[in-house]
Image (cartoon, rainbow, N blue to C red; front, side, top):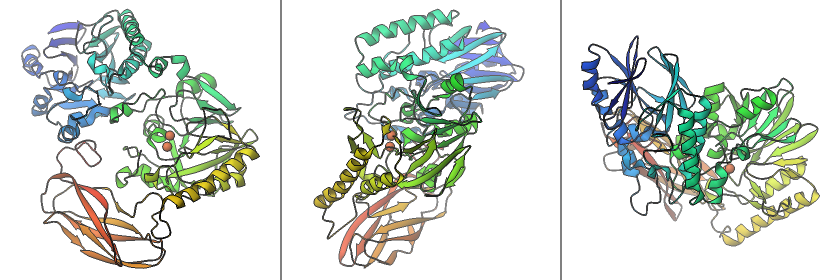
Length: 623
Ligand SMILES: [Fe+2]
Ligand SMILES: [Fe+2]
């Protein structure tokens, strides 16, 4: 084994495998094909291997992991690629091969699952033996890739995975296309190179290629070469994506209210006299270059705004975050804030359960990570953060799980309308907007009208929103909102047979909770709730039957119900599955009849039972 720097050795098989020696044992970076295990037994006789850390999921880099597992060595893998390591059955079952426009290089994913001791989470510092590794998010070679920074023998070394092969070169350029004929990966790759340059390492240890002892030049050369590549490949949004100055800093709205230019869905920061910061929404870092087919790794939340707050105000953390609604682009960074800064999440009561228990729901754009809600706030009740007074109002249309946030700052009344209305950027006129409703998100046709009435009653000076320019409110804006709101009701009543049959606009007549039902042990019974909506103006009696695979048991078999006109009712069933059944995402349904109207199997849920792959993504209950 070649000695690179004091206590760091290189073994080459299907990739570069690094072995680090400390007082407690050996730490391996990249499993390679596993041949390092034999090598270690001869080169370091009697030394214990404490752990194997991996930067990304390519098979030549990690295919030997099952051998490490056989030797009871603790394995660590990147958090955003967990389904490729730990849920391979689900991953390969779901991987699209026909009409495939998903260009991610996931064809190199492992073919069998392992059970890691832990995940390598962005920005964390993790202690292994006597050493502390900093995890740096470095999307590029894969969207979920990480680098590992370590100080050892008086040197700062960074294990960069496949981010760089040698000065100006990469090992696999094909993996930079994440969508189809795109340069998305190149844009993220360039940002990651800048990130590593800023860390000021002495040595880079790549997964393929030779150790790099002049990191700055090697990284700079690679960025230059990538820029040449972009010249003949990139679309305008891709050329835009690598302009650092465009995506950094704060825009002042009022003296104490700022917009984060690096936020994709807009994050606003309120600054208090005590010099604390509150965030309204905290989602993806801008720019957003998302492939058509989403994967957790391509929707990876990264920090934004913190550097700008530090520079401008000396503020180093977010104290409290309030989301306008539950969509991924507004909340996905909240678990990161909670983990890194102990940020408190305050939200309208209506949003809380979706944020804490996302697997219970089947609505669009929900974020799969559970987050802790510190304060649930009822609608129409005043509350305070520092010197600022707030009120939450019911909101809808874009999603039922949203709130209109009212507050005062610098003598102005402001409301945050989330994504409910899109104010037109095209014409730069505040009286031009569109209704950003989403049917499946529980749209009720009266919601835009109600919103217009509410805004008129509140009479704010400014409207801020999820994606659009700040609007100065005047009578013309209010009148236009009101007219459009009432027209929206009429348009939907023209299009739908609401006099005879009315599931309003979402057409969701029943729901099963939880949507993802998990049996984690053999012979368990589980309760499910079924919510039924009567689409008729008259009260109806009905039968609700649970439809299950053969051999499953349910109590009761059939529920008899009486539901008032256009009313709702929630029922409960207890389901028991056969003993040791091992299954993933088995669909079940409810069949509903109201009086003489057989409505059919109008709701479904997915059952996972005793599934051995423990990641909640791919191999487990969320999928
Ligand atoms: Fe949004
Ligand atoms: Fe949204």
